[in-house]
Length: 165
Image (cartoon, rainbow, N blue to C red; front, side, top):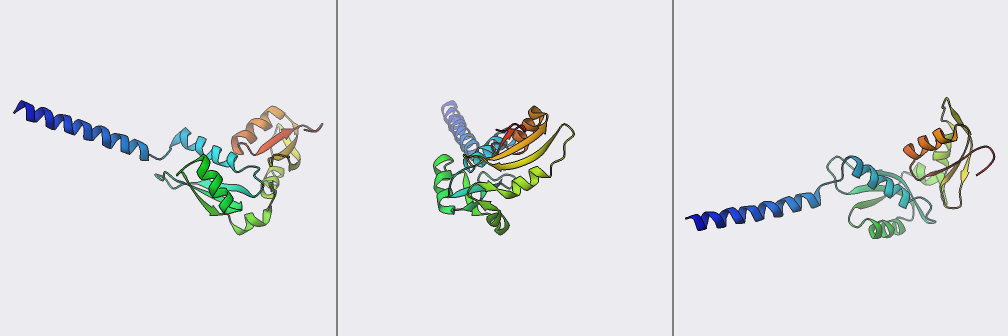
């Protein structure tokens, strides 16, 4: 009887470990892991010549991120699948985003940046850097501007003062 009980308990233990490992493998990213993944996806889509990430999102509990892209969907799918295998679904960005995107220049982002109002700094100009990021000319506290923009637009901006980049 003890031998049978021992085998049953061992089998149940192995099943519990297997189920736990399977559940852990399918667990969607949460908290900081989700923020890091979405930031990495935005950075991967900043600057490529044929496509650009506009939005990254997922419904709560989803393990796959929906990545809205303007430009070549096929190029984006190939690049993101190579870098993030099985973790993305690439879809076409909104028609308005298509009209605003021009080889890395993000006119919608530039308009949003020019409209920002902060007590310690102000955006006076925007443009496009050679790597596809948006250049942001700032008057005032450069460190505060960089901190704000790096938090709200990670990997998408290059901040400089009024003396140039």
